[in-house]
Image (cartoon, rainbow, N blue to C red; front, side, top):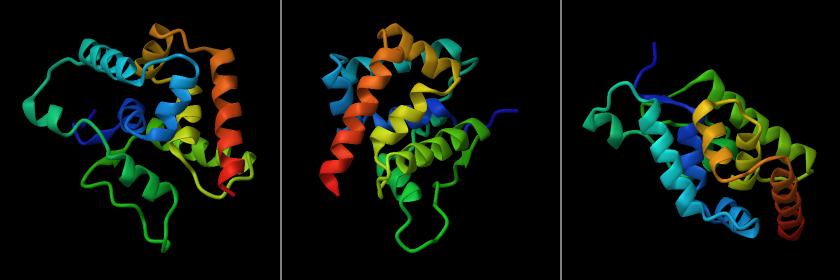
Amino acid sequence: MADRYDVHPHHVLRAVLEDRVAADALVAIDIDPAQVQVTLAHHWLDAADTIEVEEIETVGVDVTMLLAALNPADGTPPQWGGRHLTPAARDVLVRSLGVCGAMRQRRTTSGHVLLALLACKDPIVVRTFATHGVGAPESRRIRGLVEQWGRRAT
């Protein structure tokens, strides 16, 4: 049974859309991150059985928390503020680490997470990207940008 404190891939998408790297990657392929946020909210509301005020207040994870978990400074386990990662969200984060490693980059960014989200099967995330016409060609363009930006940072 789903718990309102579970972190799903669509929560991860909401978080990365607030970060400059992911937002810039979307803008580079002519996608407005603010419109993706709106679409994501609509698809999330369409999929929800019931909505409680407390649930709305706790829907997202903070991008700072997310990136700190992916790039631990001192090896301590990530703090999710009482939230629980679902297996699908954990898969997205693990996949983002793999994307970062495949690019031979040291720090995982929201761009790596965005690429992992583009490959995930979460129905809300899939519908959100489909609404904006983000498919394989756009995914390859974003991958090229994230790779290029990562090379500049090293």
